Length: 216
Length: 341
Image (cartoon, rainbow over all chains, first blue to last red; front, side):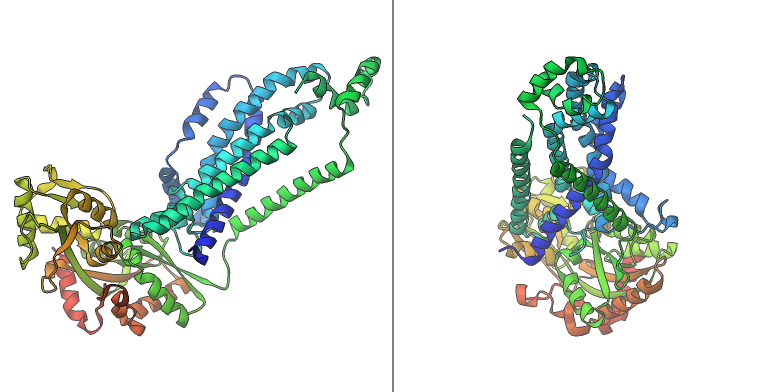
């Protein structure tokens, strides 16, 4: 029932969105930790939170202009348009505000609860950081899962900078969109169900891991 | 987690300092409760995780900067959705791959307007399109060149089975649209317009303007801003008429999604409903990509292996597209008529 191409599309989706999420966490998590240490970040917080809902098509369009052969990056010889790497880049930017704002909340809570206490007990800055991160790990993991789901489920960026090229940049959401255009609703629905199933499985697995190895 | 445990977890480090030595007794009791030193295995694991994430980062960075496989020529083709959605292009790609295995055809299926914009920005090499008026404008701008008309088919009018506008049996599309207008004005039916500046939409607007009618602001004229498939589905729900390309209609009809719609007007002698597909090479395209782009256009316009001629015959009992081949001059003059209107 599920063809090889469909399986390849599913695997590509997971690879693209997974890499994008990892990439985003490289800069998002440190940023939100730094934010927790600063006072008066209300404005920054508000801006980041408002960016969570940025239309994916808009971001896709901006990235298209940036990566296009007529774009500002073209003279540097960066030819990323219509490659999976372009989608990875776009999705990692897309999920950054979501990851920062959700992880910021849990980190902030831990900082408020433990950091002064730990400092008063003579802990060093690194120790405080380790402690805060350990304490908020379940929340941070949840934030990463949310970001992964957002990346996996978005359509605009994959369509604009990926181009939905068969066997190369076709991911689940663009394949679903193509199924609708072609009138092949059944395939679109199968892909949609697979998409949901993957999200649920990953979410449940990580929750289990959290429960087994987690602190609470 | 309790503060007790919190303090305990750092006990091992703190005793290296001197401040807490005095309270050693109390700390000792915490140790009994919860202190677990980091074992060498765990330290090793942490290191491994760190190293692994650095490696992943490097690999990702490498692929971000050098994504191309040097041995394969990527030939990017911006195409209108109708060619791609019917599956014709995949059939062509398969035949082309047999002759040029080192070329990877990459189809970017968008609207006619977007396809030309993409070519203008240098992001695609070949453009496959069916909107002579737009093609002409971009030809004048020097964005595209080397054009060939390679195929054609017919626009059809589909509508509800009971045909409230009485269009079946009419022999020209102007009269069909006039009747739909009259029926719409008297509240007997709807008309669904693509409204997305696609080739089909522009053709529909042209027919209205040839009639001197402007249904744009009426309540029976529904502009959906959507693709052909969506427009057909909406027409099916509303019991409305719409202008469609034959391929999409047949595909959706066969899938059982258009139970209320019938093919009411199809006329191969009506030049106003001829839908001409052309291939162009983008002026900014160069090197290997351009060379293979020209080969592809040549390949398509010769219809080698009869891919265009045979496509859809098995599935729908009739072809969805017809190759132009030796009728080139005839279709070029029709193309010009549309381009200079």
